[in-house]
Image (tube, rainbow, N blue to C red; front, top):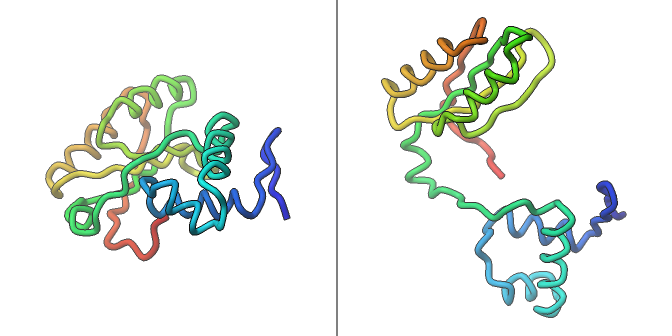
Length: 150
């Protein structure tokens, strides 16, 4: 059954193509075509359409498990003063160690995903987040291991 996103309908082949790219965004078109049982031209056409119409925003790097295991990561739940929420989001977005920022419902307003090379740097980063103008409160949870990541 096709999935409709705004003006774009994704069929089962599009979904499989996106899944393959999530696993390895550098797969050659010939490998994608073989896996999808399509011609290279058909894969190029689908990739161009998915890029132009929105589902594919960019291609990225997936870090090696060895490198990834050496990183210390945390979720930082953040309560923000309402009048300063946009300014606080801009300050957070400027932090290179912040890998994602989500708005959430509930007691906290944002969840920041952060990472550092060691616990000391992570501690300093969390302190820096807590001292931003507009941040009222933070609660952090250090991630111990990754059970599934796509």
